[in-house]
Length: 110
Image (cartoon, rainbow, N blue to C red):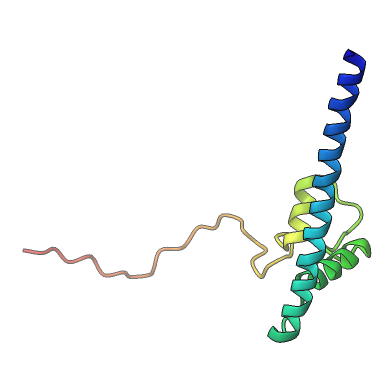
């Protein structure tokens, strides 16, 4: 009797899982169709199309740009964000600023 009851419980759980998976698949199909139809009226690309393009770019390794030879994850992040691109300021050494010649004395207020 316990074996039959255990089999019934497991089969009910399996059926619940199948119903859940089927409902997710139907919901996904409906939302893809709605997205494609709405893209016709709005003129913007459908979400499915955008996701597919990003996926294709990522599989071609153009998103983000991968540069071989980086030493650390921080260097990878700096390369991807553009933080490692040299700017116009290169020399940042300390310099003494000479005093202006014949500077007038500050005036005192009465």
